[in-house]
Image 1 (cartoon, rainbow, N blue to C red):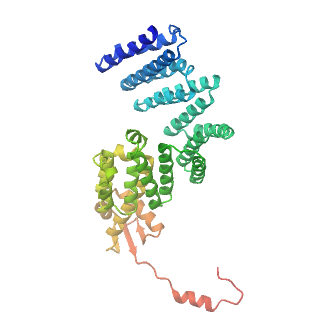
Image 2: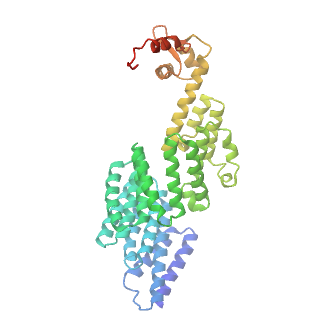
Image 3: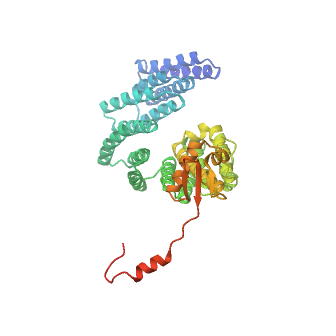
Length: 427
């Protein structure tokens, strides 16, 4: 029993040192627990003592991971994950997967740790394969696909997904199959193949329907459904999916916040703006679930966009994009839809300015709209080609000539019908 009390006492001392801010001492004590547990000093047939050692070892691994996460030390965190293999060899496979997932999650708080994460995952995938831990191998490969997706390495991600799907279908592992199909949908959406993105999402939902789907995974499915509907400009349906995801994630507390509750709320606000209902943004933020996010910069950024859109003010829109660059540009979905919204707002402003004129200088239009002349000229040219209005750009004089919309000549159509020989078909 002495060995068990030794590791437990070490854990207690390490916890006290950690609370006192003595990180070096805490680190040494936690490492000592791992050394004691793996050096053969713990020789006993008492199952309760063995279980206590495993619990102490797990605690030491997680605490060390938290220390290195807070220090931003990705290499040391990677070493902790490697050290955990001794623990993983002597514990249940489900517990093993949970521990390594917890340790890998710590990387998300460490900036510029992609290379270390990739190396750590690759090494542990090889170890899991050697040890014939198939479930752990699939779990780590799924994590690697997610990492490749975040760094926009779509081709390697698709290659790994194809191999994973072949193995998972043979094993009929519906849970991981749901996750991998969802990742496949996100990858295809990233490369712009919407048809395959929708097909992969359908496969993911089909797999999810045959099992109990955890709330976070269900929310991720709803988020992806909303994103794909938004790509099709069906913002009403997209909003309903985003609301389902937000409601689901909000119910998970802190875990839901990490899982994307704030992102789902931003997508809901985006849909309101894209539906030309910017006045609904403030009322949406008064509901109970959304109220706690109302003062966050991410939400403030969408509120600023809604105000600019409501007032049709292009300069305020640009100011919001500048002031909240990180909040509005980091998400590719929000970035692409705001680019479309900006284009529409510019178009509306140009139509309002040129409406009273039959001839107007392009430089004057550019000055009124607050844009560079070349950009305004390019946009006017595009609008003419798209038949948004009828006109001609006179580049020699630097003017825009605006025409009335031509009326269709009904007499010409009627005469062509009356004098068409029988049996002939009009083109």
